[in-house]
Amino acid sequence: MRKTLVVTVVLFLVLAFVLTSVVGIASLESVWAQTEKTVENIKSLAGTWRGYPYSFLTNTRANNPITIYIKEDGTYKAYGQIMVEGALSLSQDKKILFQSSRVSGTVTSHEERGVQVLKFWFDNGNIAGEYERVK
Image (cartoon, rainbow, N blue to C red; front, side, top):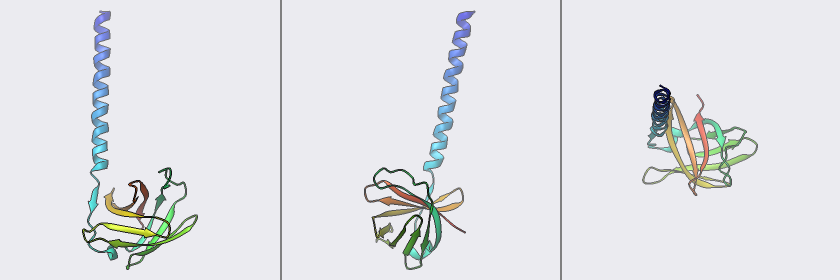
C-alpha cells in the first residue's frame, strides 16, 4: 500500500509538472505571437508615446518613464530625466530606423493587448525602449 501511495504521488507530481510546462509554453507562445505591424510611412507613427528606456550598457529597464513626441516628419523629442532629440526614417525594405543625439538602431511596431507598441532596439541588438501609443 505504501508503494502504491508513493507511485501515485510521483505520478501526480509529474502530471502537475507537465501541465504547468504546457501552460507556460502556451503563455510564451502568446508573447511571441505579438503581431508585428509593417509601417508604410513614418507619418503613421506621429503622436505621443509613453514608456520606459533601457540602459545601453546593462540592458536593464529604467525606473522613470519617458514621453516621446513624434512629428509627422519623423523627428522626435523624448522627455524624462533628460531630453533627447532624434529622427525616425524608413529604409527601402520598410525597416524603421532611429538616430538620436545619443544612439541609433531600429524600431519595430507591434500590436499588444489591443495597443500599438514601439520597441526601439540598439544597433548591438539589445532593447533600447518600449513605448505605448497614448490615445
